[in-house]
Length: 322
Ligand code: TXA
Ligand code: MG
Image (tube, rainbow, N blue to C red; front, side, top):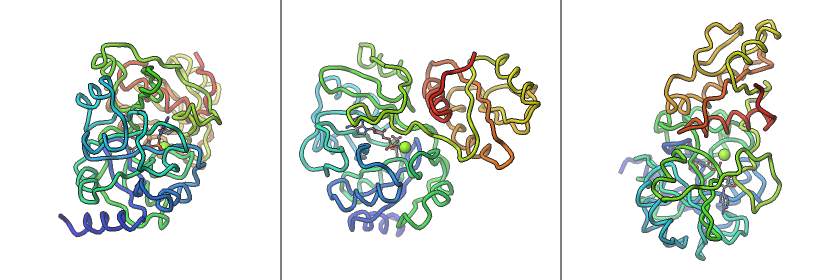
């Protein structure tokens, strides 16, 4: 084990905060079984305490210590873990009530990243970790984003390079006999439905809520600092708006080289490229000279559903323009 990994593991055991890479985004970790440690996460992020956290474990066996798995949950876990899937399941005693915000359920996942898995095995604890950004800001996909956002509020940042997936995990709730998609994310809805042999119910993009029984929806702003994000369903609509603004805007999406704009972020061709580059693009376009970001939404298939969701939230959940 590298000295840095040993140090990170010891810090977690001591109840301190360690940021670590996952395949989705960087997480801000603390031991999930101790109130004071978990409270540190909320303080560092400025996150409201009624928004529950995801528990990270190294494998399914460890997950079963903290949550109750029925057949559907087992099927999904066996097919998708390690991977960008968080399951909301009935909780077992042991993790802090702060992690679950007092809910009878717990969110749990096995991340698909060698450094994250090594850390989870080394510390031998369940680790609560939200994305390692100040509350309401864009999630970090490289270690530098964590440094910029949280700085010395974190005791150690493990650097694993850029995150492969780039959007957070897909969250599926299997409590109450229902199978609900709470947050589209790094594993496509279609893949999960195939493994489950049933459709997931999805209420689409819900507006910001203040009710802890409908979480996953609270961070309505994956927003860059200054600019307003406007979301478009078509390139023609986006282009017309850019002309109306005399090019005094930024354009984000696919194939927008003809759009008049001060800056452009091309998200690439495949839905994975779009997901991977999305948060970095939002940060890059967060410049003092840019007041409006025009975003072209991808189709809602595959990882496109998650990209759409994050862009719409970055725009404050306003209606999509044609
Ligand atoms: O990819 C990810 O999921 C990343 C990495 C670090 O693992 N984590 C992440 O955490 O995105 P966070 O805190 O930013 O988002 C977790 C979401 C929250 O919106 C929360 O409401 C929901 O998971 N959640 C957690 N526990 C829940 C529960 N018991 N019931 C419903 N939603 C829950
Ligand atoms: Mg987050």
